[in-house]
Image 1 (tube, rainbow, N blue to C red):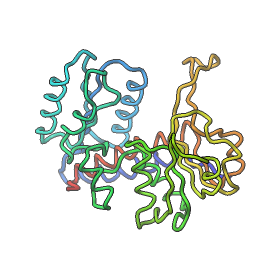
Image 2: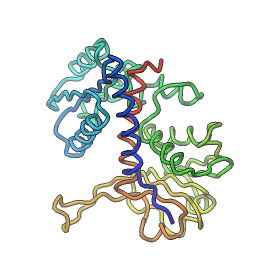
Image 3: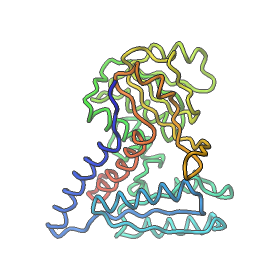
Image 4: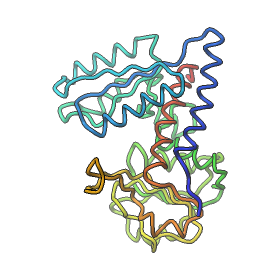
Length: 291
């Protein structure tokens, strides 16, 4: 059993990005600039944004954080997005989700200039991904693919089972795994809440990507020996022994599943760091003008 160390891999990639940014600056070019919009005071969102700001520093990027109270109107937020779309000094920006219920998240996503959509959520980027054209790939799926590639895991002809059909993870990772590329070239099965015989389907998988948001869902009897297991789950569960009062729990019963795997991601320290790393890669691409 081998651990897919997302933290270590992300650090290596960020060092590579930092070196490229240093060369850009030495040529007299401007460093990439990423802006994050944070609405409200959600603890999880605060933490995620803080980690993204730290990643920008590690990569040599300029970064800005725009904070708004949760009573900001939808139109006011759309106006702020318009300003960023038109700001030539901003290469990419993200709107941290979730947003307050009175704001339509899809409308906000659609309002972002797809050329600055470094989260990879805009319909144009999603559409380009689906047919194999250059564009910004959703950060978590892109991070998973980078992790697989960095560890030299063979994917061609393998059976990959994706648990979950979200627009953020399930659908795009299924698309990336089936594309004619390395990593890729998999036969992909997507399972969800209405899928019958999930356990039987998982037992046939060479690669399992668990992205359901259900702690401990993937158990030892669902995994065949030698499988590669990617755990995307990051659910907060109460833990009185921790100073924070909670711990992060993945979708995989790690202790019992890990001994059967050839490779497995831990939670935390697996997919999470790679997600932020992918955001940095997208921002660099935006600075270089991917479109």
